[in-house]
Amino acid sequence: QLRAWLPYVLIGVVLVVTRVPALGLKALLAGVRIPFDDILGFSNVDNAIAILYLPGTIPFLLVALITVPLHGLSRAQVVGAYGQAARKIARPALALLFSVAIVSIFRLSAKNPAGLPSMPLALAETVSAAVGGAWPLVAAFVGGLGAFITGSNTVSNLLFAEFQLGVAQKLSLSPTLTVAAQVAGGAMGNMVCIHNIVAVCAVTGLSGREGTLLRRTARPFLVYGVVVGLLTFVLSRLT
Image (cartoon, rainbow, N blue to C red):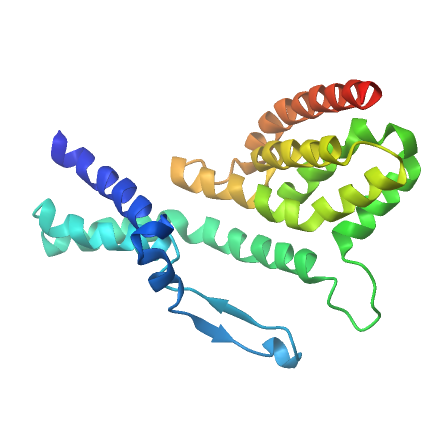
C-alpha cells in the first residue's frame, strides 16, 4: 500500500523542492527555455517554454519514469499503461489545444495595429459604463470572467486589476475593496473555466460530459458571485 502511494508522495516532494526559490532549483529549471520569436511572422509576438519547469515534465514525467523500476513494471505493462493514458487524453487534448489558443488570443489581443484595448478590457469597460455606481455588485464577476477565459486567478488579476483600480478611482470607490472583489472573483471563476473542466473530465474519466459539469459548477459560481457582490456593495457604503 505504501508503494502505491509513493508516486503521489514523490510528486508532492518534487513539486515543492522545484518551486521553492530558496532551494535554488526553481531558477535553474526555469532558465532552460525554448524560445519562439516573431510567431506567425509578427514582430514582437514572442514566447518561450520553460520546458523543465512545466509540471508535466517535472514532476509528473520524472515521477512516471521513476515509478517503472519502483514498481518493477514490465515493458508490456509500461506500454499498456501509456497507451491507455494516450487514448484517454486524446479527445481532451484536442479540446484543450483550441481552448488555450482562444485564451491566448484574448490575452494578447491588446497587441494590434489599431491600438485598440484587449477584448476582455473592452468588455469590462462597456459593462462598467452601463453599471455605474452599482459596480461593487459586479466587480467580482469581472474577476470571474478573467479566470473563465484564462483558467488562472493570477492571470485574471493581470488582465483586470489595473482596470478595476481605474474604475474604483473614477467612481470614488475604495480601490482596496474593489481589487479584493476582483481577486475573489478570479478565485470563483476557476470553477467554470472551460479548459479546467476539460482537464478534470479527462482525469476523472468523464470526457464528453463537460457540458453537464459546467452546468453544475455554474450554480455555485453564481451564488458565490452574488454573495461577494452584496458584501462588496455593503462594505463600499461603509467606507
